[in-house]
Length: 82
Image (tube, rainbow, N blue to C red):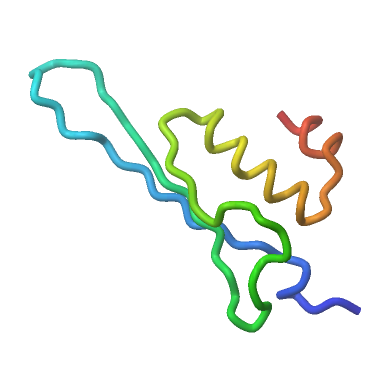
């Protein structure tokens, strides 16, 4: 039986609002997502980036889907939960 560490992945997502020089200008937000690597698991076995900056939810979703596919979750499972 696989341990909890072998069957989970952890991600850290940080989002912030960019400072604006124009008063009452549109809000601009950005973020960064990072996969947290448990040192007891070793390094990832594929060449996916461990961190990505994003400015849209689609960019965040792309990073997450790539990692979840590599983890072994079928693509149809990921697409059907939108």
